[in-house]
Length: 437
Image: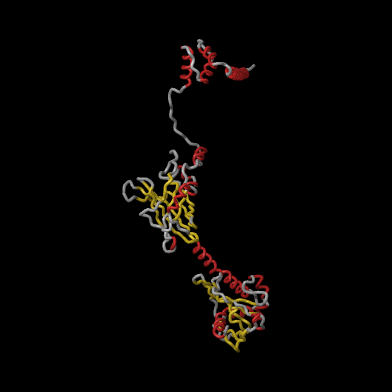
């Protein structure tokens, strides 16, 4: 048998004997163990069993064996070693839940009159440290402890932020700034609530620090947010008291009303697409060269009650010509049934295409519906012309009609369409001046 096999067999036999002895001793009374301990050299497993039971045996020899065994198992000296955290351990530390939560402050908001933001205001922010060690009024340090953006909507102030990498330690856990913060805006423009707050930078060789959970209150040095007139003043400054030696200043900047920004974006896009209009105070106004309507014979009122609708103002058949203001020699016949659309948001003329003078427009009615939809034309031969509107969709539809006829390779239809659209305001003036309702 080889040496390795002998050693292996010995170890297995020792384990078996130890387990047998351990199990066997379970039934022994304390007196039997003490009897063995009174001997000169009691077996080790007897001493271990006595210590495990914590029994006290009479006799000097037994007591001596028990005391020596306890002393030999204790550590005579304590040694201190530096702690080195592995990446896995550090990650586990970062995932430890905070002992305190900012949500605990919710019940205290009842003490404030909170602002309700109807639309949405977005601000950039940074947080800087204020140090009071040299000056009583404090010195603002020139670096950002934290940064990001805040969105105010309804009663909520949603932070999307991060603590600076320079802070180190647990501050890199995004929950502390995105979740463990419960801040709201008051009606007088102050930030109140509770948040996780890191006061010290932590080096890679230092033990991580848990954050404080501080309360933001109205401060005499703060400059509140003028959220009702954000276009006039788009910044704010909130001083935060933390400790005797240091605090912070939370700055808001470049605050924007998302509704106004969205309108500006839409207007910018519309200006590039709706080139026949100009935008004036959210109203789209036609910029085409104008034409003038000239009456050639008296108009004829529509008198049939069944064909008169409440929204059809000044409905009548007019007879005349459209004269270009650029080329006074160019005259286009224009005779048809027309009315003004009753709509306070726009200037809209509606004409019927069922007349020989408008045949060139009528032959495109199906094609134009396929391209632009039925916003300004229908299957009964009515076509609308808009010169002023606050409805973006109607402005887009009018632009679509214009682009269609421009690209249709039909010179007669293109010239007629331009004349009618350019003469719409003149026709509406004629109706309002001459036609009785």
